[in-house]
Image (tube, one colour):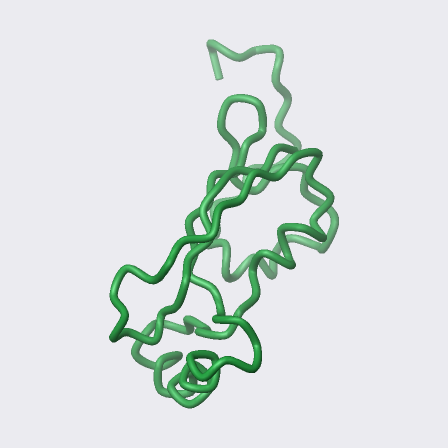
Length: 113
């Protein structure tokens, strides 16, 4: 803080992104902050609904949540990012790194506050 005296912290919370119940919805300006309030992300997401791959994700998801520490295979995280009211989102879809795993395609990019 000595180098950034112009910044004022009302509250500093350390919490995993999946479990922020101590923070009220809509009360935070920044969850992950770098210079300029930029969120960089790389996340596996659901295959397109109706595809055979999506069906397999649905089959594996109950077990995957237990072995993957609460990970959901069928999340459509890009929708959450698009609805989060970022001023700018740059997003790229990528094929899964391993075709034989149910963790499907990935999204990678940045979102600006």
